[in-house]
Length: 476
Length: 154
Image 1 (spheres, one colour):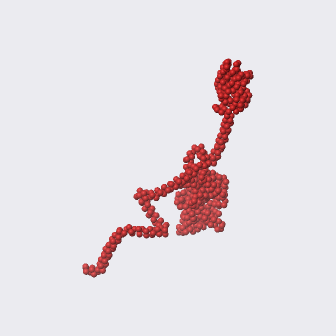
Image 2 (cartoon, rainbow over the protein chains, first blue to last red):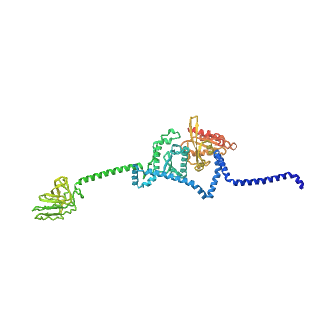
Image 3 (tube, chains in turn brown, yellow):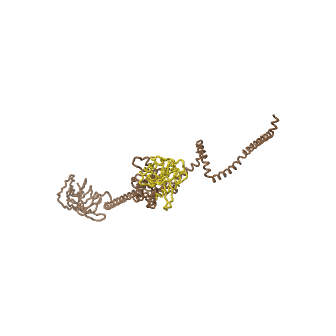
């Protein structure tokens, strides 16, 4: 059997042996190559990487979509896996990239904010005026400056027919091209209808007024046949909705029928773009309209100007009054001037031998002005020999309405005016005021007539003058 | 019934179909040339969700319609009867008598057909609307149906 086997399988056996030898040789070759690879690893990797890079780059360029489709799921899955299992490593790896990007974005935003604030607080007439108005409203100017500096942009404005959702007018102020405005306005209309039907069923219909997404909002103001949807970005300025509402109302007042009859033929529509553009231009200018407590900025400014004008007139009047008063009181020069003094001290010096001071009539009830709280001291001294006995002041002097006019020639008597007093041209209270006699002036008593003294003295401006002063200013 | 497929077959710009299942409407557009009238019609197509259940249709979506494309399924007889109900409901919401066309869809499924041309004639007369045998799958008569509605609107 063995011989037979040898005869039958000799060739195969030889082949097996040969193959075994080849395998051994190949194993040795592989081992050698492995060894070579290990030793030449540093040289091989750059070569392979370069080639792989070129191949990959070529493949990506030629078959971008296919590559994205092929690699997307793998990369996505790998990223998710990596984030899940090595969160800290991923954070560390991404931080230099993401951190820089975030820092740059925040820095740019802050710069923008700073520039806006600088622009707001840069002194100019409008700002000063505005600051005063805001102060009057109780608004802190710094807070207001920051508030006004917050970014605000109107990206798009749609004027849309109510039920049909047809675009009556569309203004795109954004640099980016917008998707089909007809479709957007249709979807907006659908969303409004959906909200109304879903949430206001059986109730008074209330319009959807705002849709927010990210930094942008769609502000909606509705009229009877059309509504405006303004796509805005950033912080909506105060009073914006009121102005939007006003725009809708104005468009309805002017073009209601045209807006209602519109069926898609643009030639039937009036010029709607001008008022809409004017509205958005006004709002996005450097000084956006503000309103507080229902007043627009323009109204507040007008009110402020009116108030300022009235205040100016008042101050001017005050100045004129004080000017006039100063001019009238100029002769007094010092002290508080009272044309009709309440308190006068007259020192009378009599030099006549026979001097009988005339009783000083008390003020009558009918003779203006009526001195009040009169506390006058009269010191009478007679030189050289005779000392006239002064008539003691009667504290309770009774007014004598029927006093008989008397005239007394005064003998060389001088009076020392202790407080400023107005003199008159004639012995009459209604007579024009003549000259104010300042405190410390010595006057000569010429005569006494009724309740008036006629006096003479030398005025610093007019020289020698003669005038009258009331005796009741010299009450007892 | 294949409404959405028909619309997709016809229009050129459209929103994602997801809107249909979220707010119940999807809006698309198509500009149609009308050589006979020497005009162009810009059709905004509101594809309403709701299917056989009219109550699911938001009535506000119908209020501003200028014309209506009504779709029935040739392989389901009851969809033809539904057209009458839809038409009545539409008349309640709409302020005017709207031009209509009927698209009898799935004409390609000849073996499953349950609605005859006589039945279509009958409903067409009742609703004062022309009908077209369409296939969203092959596009057959779809263009023609929408174009006729556009002609009626001009």
